[in-house]
Length: 139
Image (cartoon, rainbow, N blue to C red; front, side):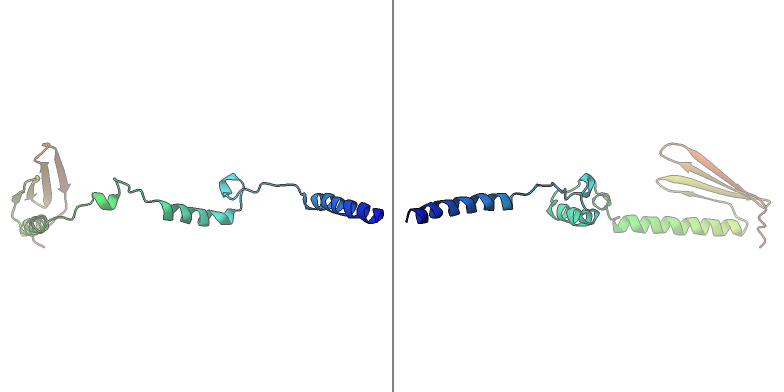
């Protein structure tokens, strides 16, 4: 009986010591983020998780800064384009002309096949002159 008690005390103690030795291993840190040495295939997963959690709004987003032009602005632009086209057509027929809008003044003069276009910015007063030679107004 004494041996049984002795074996009963030694076996659980030896099992607990051997179980502790068998389960102990070295811990090795492996980063998840590819910026810190992790697997590069984790990058798209991490960025998609970050973007799905991001609820901040950028106040300077280009799509928020664009304002749709009004119908009047579109009509004015269309009319200015049409008038400028008509002015160029008239110059092609040998006539000179001028177009004045809120933003600019366009003066077109055709002298003996030399087309001169003078564009003046009404706000700043800056002018641009375009000279095209070799035109034949009879064509």
